Image (cartoon, rainbow, N blue to C red):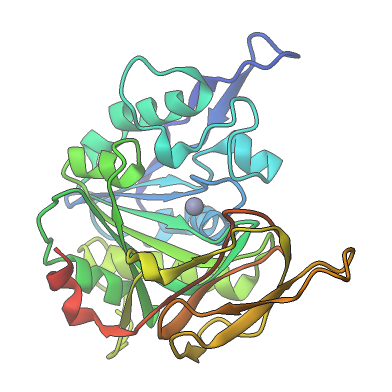
Length: 326
Ligand SMILES: [Zn+2]
């Protein structure tokens, strides 16, 4: 049985109704002797549930099954947003994935980021940080590799994506210094992420796939040598960084998608339409796929406005082509 200790921390989150309010962020340290230290994080965005459910399961299960090393579990790292069911922090409107801006931290969201940079990232060699589509998007369940800036290609990433066990892997390039990938990069922490589900709902099936993915990563990183690794010979990589991968609307309307997640589409194929039922004289606007590929992400809210992301699509590449993205 591993040694378990609570390392919760609390962060000031003042509101107009509560001057000295503080929010507790739960963190569990599970230690099973020598070996790497790994952080499993969910709830950076409070309305993304699959990772939060999976890390909570491991909170209860991992002390019995961890074989080596140390794992830090944070099932709802933005606890205030998780409790409210919102993407951003209710008290200051902050986006935790843009709040790693260094000291001095201004407000609740930046204080969580500062605490993670001080208390967690210097103590781990790897992390898995699970996201999903949240309220407004749905994703084809995928592991995610984010290249930050000019980071060198890390040859361990494909093995970690394979260990996560999902047949799809999304590639992003992030340039914002306040993001979680930027913070991981500054601390030399190997980072895998995921986008699983979305649409303000979740399911036991998706949460279990996420939990299995996290256990697979712990096995790949050497903390659970007896845990079987998934056999997924073929993982398809989707580069969502290209401007042609994202279709945004520039006008308001009701989005009626005509395609499903995972569907293959041709370039300029009809993927749905934008309608305005309350203004029947407004012409229906056909929406065309910005490029050929697989539909990886779809907007989950029909009513849409200028600038909203409606769809993401990218050609399926072999995972081996990841190195060429660096
Ligand atoms: Zn997210």
